[in-house]
Length: 206
Image (cartoon, rainbow, N blue to C red):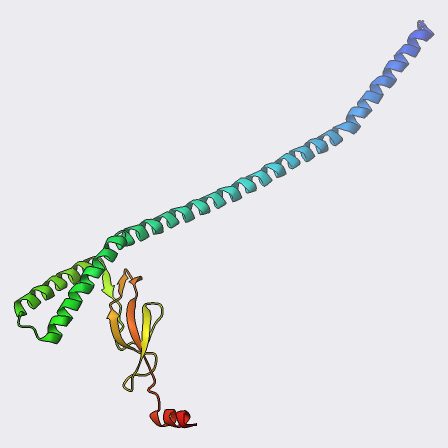
């Protein structure tokens, strides 16, 4: 003969079963949602890491490019300093050579008897010119060349029927280049067309 349960006990057991079923249902329903949220969070974190990696990579490339440019610029400046370090002393030597050239020219024009002195001056001048060549100093080409304001300095104009206008017809002072850079311009006289004497006379009469 079965023993009849107490109604309160039956009610308590029914409530416990309901709570258990509800909790089980919540677990079954909520588990996929939690996994999706976790995956989303991981994906966002991964995307953030990738973005930061790209930023760091870009920063590294920029820094490397700037470093390479700085190294090349310093190398160029070092080469320029090495090539033109003697510029000031060479400028001081040029007037000495000018005087030697004038002395030689004067002696030749006057046909002086002191040929030995002239030979000595020419030898000294030749030695100076070799020193300049050693330091890559070369004369500026001027006589008979078209006037070039980049390396010639015009001191005046001369009428000439033998040369085209704007041609260097006389060099008053030699110019020099140092490693293909102008050290001193040549002082020159520039040709101009010969004035038509007939036309000039007619103009004066009118």
